[in-house]
Figure 1 (cartoon, rainbow, N blue to C red):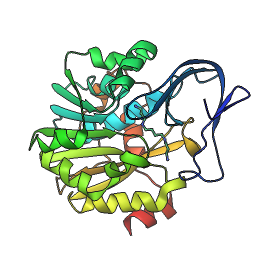
Figure 2 (figure 1 turned 120 degrees about the vertical axis):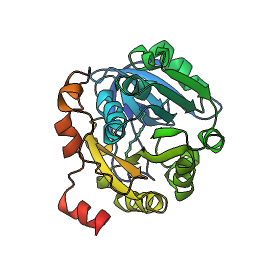
Figure 3 (figure 1 turned 180 degrees about the vertical axis):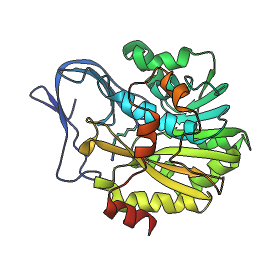
Figure 4 (figure 1 turned 90 degrees about the horizontal axis):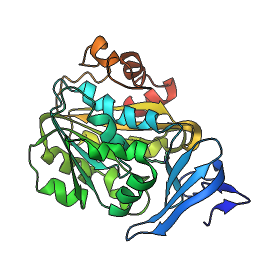
Length: 287
Ligand code: SPM
């Protein structure tokens, strides 16, 4: 493993986070291979449990994955009044599917993931996340998200893009043309939510992504969550709604219903707080 040094894995990505690197002490390398699309590593760490690494970047650890998976799922699902039919693009570890199927109004979940090896290895080594694939609401397609959405018009209430970072092929998932395609696949009042990077690292990039989203969506917002194993311990989501009266920060599912769902991070209060941004970020994105 390139970035394993004296038993430490270091996330060295000079293009994405210059001059800094998060490290985890590794107990054991469980699996590594090169799929058709990427380098895949699964390691057992000293303090974060099992960890999935794609192309040298941490995707999720057993200790903190629930924060990301719950928030990227429940922010858009609860911002929508009736999220019956959901599309997940990416999310090969199964953690987002595991969360989306918990929403009481969700009837069908379709997921399109390009790399079958991530799915298979997650089933084998990350069963607490991959259990999402076993749910009867879920239909998984192995293929390209762009091709999939071109074939589906006005179908989904919510589209969630659980992507890796904007480097290599994933760059296209942050561009305006991707938002146009999602709009095509969404119903008239649909909502999208995508992994959007951290304002500590990607302030201008997020603003650019939001501008691309604004070209096609009446309302756009950025919300945050805390994930200690991501750079700066932080990540955000770019959300777009086709409903011009959309109020993202107020959950449409009642508090008592939300409280009855088996969740560890997301709550009605956390939902609203996720949209509160520091002054300089608020100004940069919205003024
Ligand atoms: N289902 C979990 C997959 C996680 N996908 C997002 C991974 C992002 C990792 N890098 C974060 C860097 C933020 N600037």
